[in-house]
Image 1 (cartoon, rainbow, N blue to C red):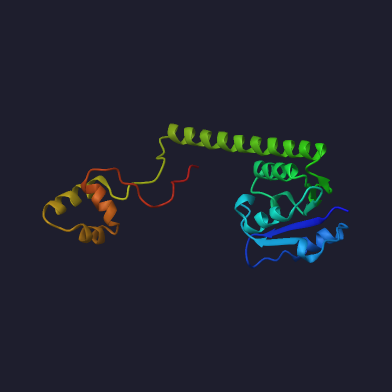
Image 2: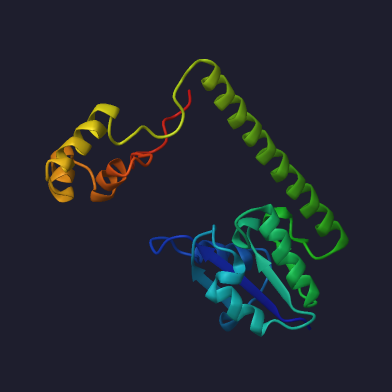
Length: 203
C-alpha cells in the first residue's frame, strides 16, 4: 500500500490551507496528519528553497504518492513545476494534481500535459517580450523619453559644481536640492545621474 502525502501552501500568514486539505480529502485521499506538509511561502519561491518542501523530500520514498490541489502549489511557473515533477519522478514518487482531474504528473500522459503547459507559458512570455519591444520602438519613434529622468537638471548640475567650488559642503547641497549625497557627488564628478523614481511608463 503506497503512502500518500499532501503538500499544501499559502502565500501569506493571513491565509489558511484548510480548504486545500478538505479538497484533497473530498477527492478520496485519506491522509494522516503527519503526512500533510503545510507551509506559508510565496509562490515565487522555488521548491528547492522552501523549508517545508525540502523536509517533505526527505520523507518521500519510492512508490509514495504526493497530492496537490493545483500546479501553482508546486512552483512559481510551468518550467519550475516541470523541474519539481521531474525531481519527484526520479525518486519514484507519483504526483497527483486535483486541478488536472487527478492526473499523475509523473506518468507519460502527465509529462505530456506538463510539456503542453510549459509550451503555452513560453509562448505567453514571447508575446509579452514582443509587445514590450514594440512599445519601446513606437515610443522612441514618437520621440518619447525612455528610462528614468535625471535627478538634477543640467542647470542644477552646473550650480552644484559652482557652489561646491565656493566651499559649500556635499551635505548642504544635498539638503538644498532635496536629493542624496551620492547624487551630489556624482554631479560633482560629472557622472550620469538617474533619479530614484520608477521607469517612465510607455503608453
